[in-house]
Length: 457
Image (cartoon, rainbow, N blue to C red; front, side, top):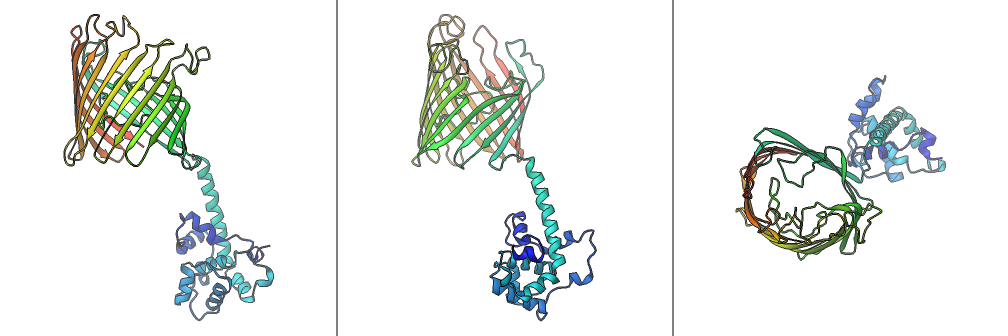
């Protein structure tokens, strides 16, 4: 049986208190003493300090030297001749005797010290046990220490004047809510799950969440293999693993610089591999089976819709760029297409960041609804971000050649947006602006005015 069990039947108080103080170098014994004596009757003598010249002080010095106590503030105080409180002395005794010494190794001074400070040592033990129990209660309702949760909510308010019957200058409010869970099992891997809900449609990007039910948007696992990062899972978005940065334009409003190659509209079972090195070069390739959960279509089959995406990029300190390629077949029930995108960015000091991107779509088949001409669609986008005051002003122009709106030719449309994002506080940003989308001749232009509040946690 350990010595301390023989003397008091108590564990190492100092060793237990230290972790509760976030691994601090010392414990504030005065605070512990005040807390410990709450509601307890303790004599005035228990508050008296242990000063040089007392038998207990000399015994503590001998005990510290004999048993090699941890080099903490209390042993330093003994060496410098400073007084100790009775709770500090009790903690020091505990630190010296917690090593499980045999009974034969215990001298008379150690026994006498344990008897003298037994009350304080018992109070420390009881209070530490209570604190440990409360910590366990708190931990029981928490996520694993290796799981990190983040997320956000977006409140969007505005009105749109456009060709749709829903775009009738009526003030509307939409929302989007996202929770992201990241769990690591060995420090290098990660299980990612995203839960989303929202009803955004007319006021924001077309790719925003429009399902008012709570759904799992993404679910996959990533792990390293040498210099490569492998991702696989039952719910992978087409744009989840794209290493190349073709633009650094904020894209937090209406326009999307890669509206074809990185639209992220295809989701399903998938696998991806990404690579990056210190020189700035990076690359990725991903495969998503949009019908991979369907046993009648499956993955890598003629009946399924398979999407292959590849990227290659380079990023330096203040410039970079990349290329994207996507091949979505038409074996199943969706329209196949091949896309190619290229873009570059430049971030000069004290000047606006400049992003230029060009994206094109080649339809696999001619469709009376989505591509009556059989021709390509393309989009050229130029975006600027510039810090103005505490926030960021953003401006973008997009020339969009749309082959889906005419039976005999493509039409070139111009889109614009201008908005300002202001950080209200940590985790809260407010942005407001306007956008303009040119009509296609048969439909009127669209103009929108929007204010959005972003909450992140």
